[in-house]
Image (cartoon, rainbow, N blue to C red; front, side, top):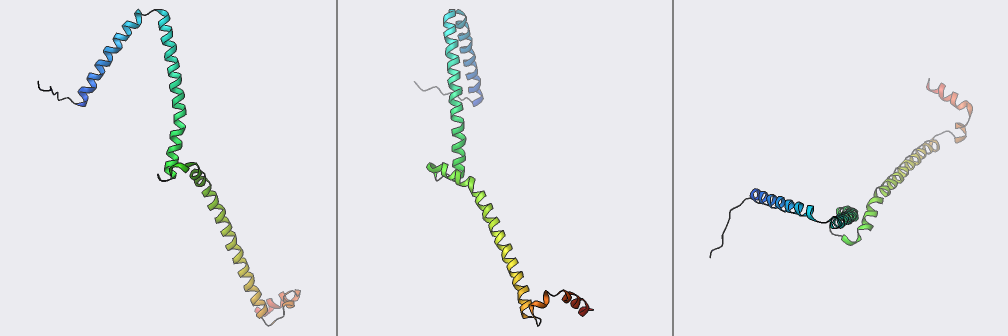
Length: 148
């Protein structure tokens, strides 16, 4: 005997599956009305316990999935087992870069001040006047009258 082949689409399979599910649900509902009260209570209690366990399992699984996804993203998929170390390093790295940048800015600023002070000192020491003349109160008047 040759095998019987049916050309069905995904839509036909979904429709068939929905019909079978509806028939099974109807039969179970009929039988549930005929079962004794104590059996119904035990089944209700078992359903509640199963739902509670399922919620706990989902709650325990959800953070692990998020953590492993973040670790995989940070380790570029190749460093796997040391994910917590890489996550810590990645979270501290911006702070390290910020502090390094601030230290670099401070050093550049100090160097600019030192260079400006060195230029002033060079001008004072290479001038014809002695350095004591700059502290003389009459020297400011001399400079004002000399430029006019």
